[in-house]
Length: 170
Image 1 (cartoon, rainbow, N blue to C red):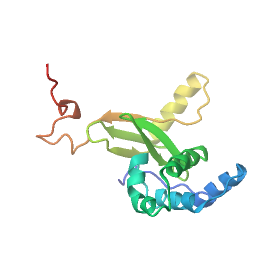
Image 2: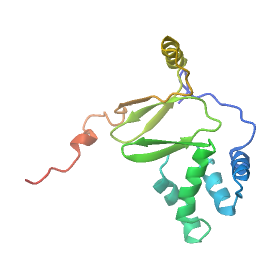
Image 3: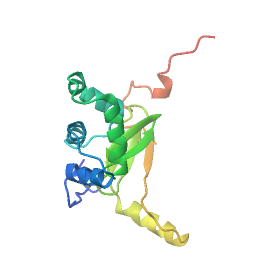
Image 4: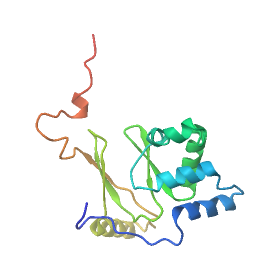
């Protein structure tokens, strides 16, 4: 999405893989081939994903025993600890997004199809700062999710997900 609310790029000192290797060294761990493959895949594109979606994308590597399921889960946790990924819970699922190298931003969340639309607003940032000053509060970060239904899901003939549930017998 372009325009007024598009995310702007952020300069980082190190690429994500090098930043992760540095983080692991501080913990006395190594950047193994499995971790490298996972990080390269995760940072090859910018998508929101859950662990099961990542496992599905890594299926060929898992089948060839290049990556294991437990290593994927451990690496996701380590990427979060390293400040490279941010975990959020939406619709009962743990969703991950890139944090390192991405600006503070907010989301529009479609409750029907689970689509996430990222946007950045200086007006929201100013409002947060104003409210924080009023309450003598120091902001570390903020996360805003606006929930509703996207344009595609509001098209005539589509039912909201709450109306798609099967009827209960009884």
